[in-house]
Structure formats: C-alpha cells, structure tokens
Length: 92
Image (tube, rainbow, N blue to C red; front, side):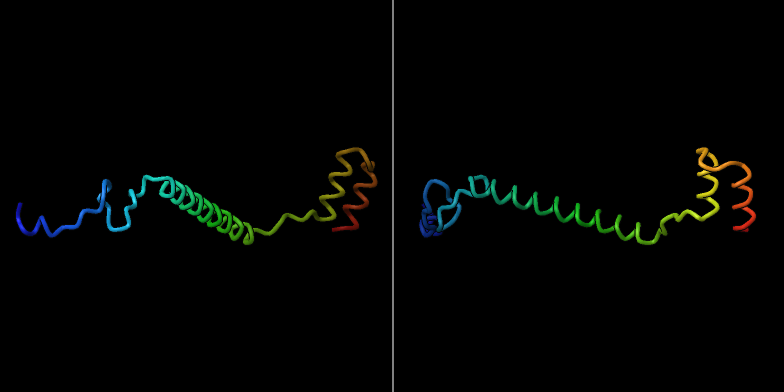
C-alpha cells in the first residue's frame, strides 16, 4: 500500500468526514430539504401576492354616478319613466 493511502484516516462505514454524518439523505437531510422547499414556496407565493396587490393599486374602483343609479332603479322598476326623465334632466 502506498504511503499516501496509509496516511488517510478511516472515518468509519460512511466515509463522509470526521463527524460520521451519512450525508444529506438521512432523516435530518430530508427534513431540512422539506423546510427549504416550504420556505421557497412561501417566498414565491408572497412575491406573486405582492405583485398582484401592487397591480391592483393602480386601478381605480368603478364608482356609480347618480345617473347610473337612476338608470338601475328605472330598469328594476323602482321609479317610473317620468321620474327617471326628471332625475336625468336634474342631473344633467
């Protein structure tokens, strides 16, 4: 056996380092992977929600004008044609 190979320490059955950790596929590795996945899902969802919220801030909500209200009331039968015409004339 060469001298360089003999100088290498034996770390046990896993040969992953001096701490004897079996790598990322142990129970802790799977748990950390799931937490990381959950973290990125939350970050991406927050970004999407924030962008949609900012986009909605630029749009002004539609406000009904008094004439729109009179038209709606006339269409539903709450006021007669004459009352609608009077309101329309007064609002114009």
